[in-house]
Image 1 (cartoon, rainbow, N blue to C red):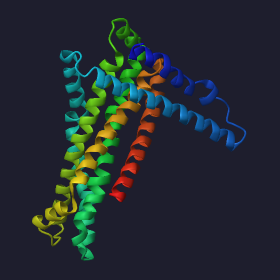
Image 2: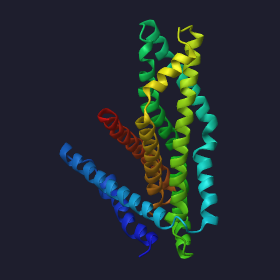
Image 3: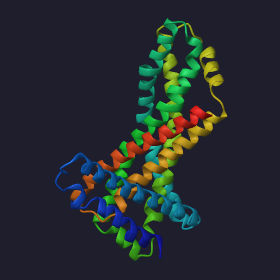
Image 4: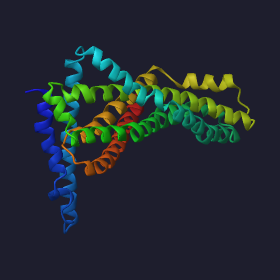
Length: 292
């Protein structure tokens, strides 16, 4: 059985069950335990569907990495441009704002209590480890992830996915793989630019406030507070953000035949679940930082 048929016959069943009137639009249960049981059952079905879809996508990436280069490479470059290069102006603004609002105020506060020696470690924890990657993931989810759901949901509703299957084209390979790879590369790159921009603009704000800290001392503290594990975990975290954001949004857009009027509702649900997934991934990496 091909991957497309597997997606259609197995994932659609779980997705359709989570959207059925029995669970989502049924009257409210008479007790909180019934409500909790319904929500728990929906959660388990969603996790099952997302897990299966993620495994299928990984299998397609590994199995068909050398298939149709002339078609797939332009699509991958297009998705990298959409999830990365096209968002650069917005992220330059966000980096400047983050530097002025967060980093600059932190530098000023530490200078007032004579604790500038802790500036490097504070910036690494706040910007490099936490705020930079998570903010980047949420912004890309809101901008590109929503577009993924709408595009794929509309294509599914109009029968375009079935048309690809009729032509012998695997929809997962043609529609999902470029989005997954583009999202992973985009979030990784944008996180680096956001961190660099926020740290630089933060010092500029501190300089305007006459904080007694030279640029050399500022960046020396940053370098001393970083080690190779910070870079490795930052790369893994951003790649994980990109992969799972793409999986969640593409799953909701592709796994079930939709009507046009259902696309907006599914998009809202996909973005909500994407935010939850990002928070859970971030919590996992916090544990890794604590035990390193």
